[in-house]
Amino acid sequence: MFDLKKYRKKSPWILHYNAGSCNGCDIEILASLSPKYDLERFGVINTGNPKQSDIFLVTGPVTYRSRERLIELYTQMPEPKVVVAVGSCTCTGGVFRDMYNVEDGIDRYIPVDVYIAGCAVSPELIIDGVVKALDILEKKSKEMEKPLKLFKEAISENGVVNRRNVALKVGEVHEEN
Amino acid sequence: MKKTINIPLGSQHISLLEPVRFKFECENEKIISVDSDVGFVHRGIERACTTKFKFDAIGYVVARVCGLCAITHSLSYTAAVEKLLGGEITKKAKYLRILLLELDRIHSHMLCLSHTCENAGFEAMFMRIMGDRELVMEIQELLTGNRVQFDYINIGGVNRDINSEVAKKIIENLYEVKQRVLGYMDEFTNNWSLSLKFKGIGALSLDDAYMFNAIGPLARASGLNIDVRNEIDYLPFNEVGFAMQTQSEGDINARNIVRLHEILNSILMCENVLSGLPEGAIFTKLKGKPNGEAIVRFEAPRGELMYYVKGNGSAMLERVRIKTPTFASIPVFSHIFVGENYADAPAILASFDPCLSCTAK
Ligand code: SF4
Image (cartoon, rainbow over all chains, first blue to last red; front, side):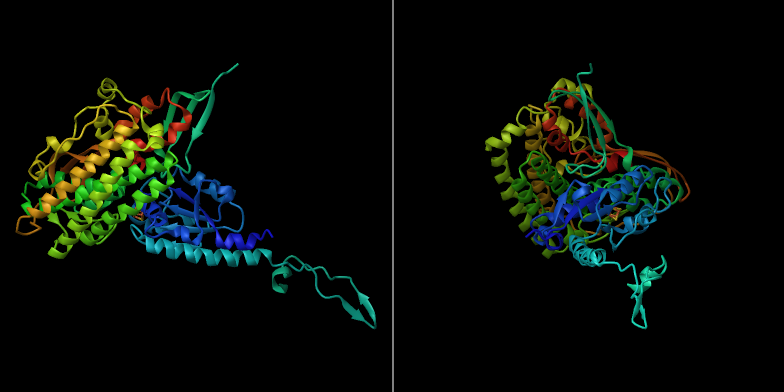
């Protein structure tokens, strides 16, 4: 049977975007997909299409011109999605912090789930980060699939069930679930 | 009615490591004109070098212009400052610099070769070369402590000494790499399906190479013998056995063959460096602040890299100008694309070995 949940966990697809990095971290991502480190043993495949990917690997401190594309790619990815910031300059701006064309890290624009520090990060750390991202991905998909209850229990008075006011108010939905 | 269609490639694309946008105007399958846009990764490093960092830290900052030729960037900057300070560094430091420069060239060329294969649709070769490239990364890590951004060179020498164990390991691994590269040589010249993708595609004639001022392996594949290593004397390249590698066809295959020969030559140079490594200190202290102007050129894996440094006697520099190889090659790129099939575009692009974070800085 077609079991999306299982496939998503066993074979997450990654999308890689360079938002102004120095290439150091990009070639380490390539290296971690290559035979010695072999990230592909976790079923990870590098895709070029945001609409089919689950994990978003970003490198670089977000330059002025790449930020629109970064947000565009992020919004095109389907939920659930995990963002991994690869490299010191992606996390905080690193050596590029305060340069005039740089926006000091991607968490100003999109929410980040895993930060990987290091300049340049080693492939071991990238693998570690992606494996962490897999856990988060699973948690996120569970959360998404949990049904939301939008009503409370009906009150019965003297054998008469009163269904008035069972609908939850907007603020109460999260408390109840 | 308009007969042509516009096809964009980039700014985010599976065959690209970095954001660059090409707009191809195609008639049927043929590309008839190209428009490129390279400024996506501009960060403003040149300006930060004159406002944010002191001159002795800039060697590490300019390494972050590009991760692939990081060592050439910091080396060029350091050589320019050393020229201004007027000191002489020891011979051992010079030899160690050559060693790392050539190791960097080997791994960069291997990456380019594997990427060309991948974009031509030969995934197995990509994996094979990437796997073998780890042998070089391993010794770089042993020698410098990091795999990509080495931070090995500082003003006055190098940061780490080499010991006999590391030297032994380097020799062993390089021997292994050499055997593998000879294997690729066979594959690239005799494999029939690769020849369909590479032979005669994306050709650049000698006259065009001369006219468009092509540099690096791109020019050498067309028979133009320019290599900065032959022309400079800050580092004793000729002493350790440098030899110019040229081909005459100018197509993708010729570029690959030039790169393979250069890897072999670099391996030879590394071995010569290690066998003739002089005794002595690896660091000499240079005093003073840079004052005046200096221009330095080096051969990066992709061609000539030029640094211009101007100081005024204080810790802050007045101007740092970086002219990178890919920047000089963009007109040639556009020229080569015209008249080729669109389906070959990614492979041709990879065979140029473009480095956009260098170009945009
Ligand atoms: S963290 Fe360092 S090596 Fe990685 S992209 Fe940023 S500057 Fe380059």
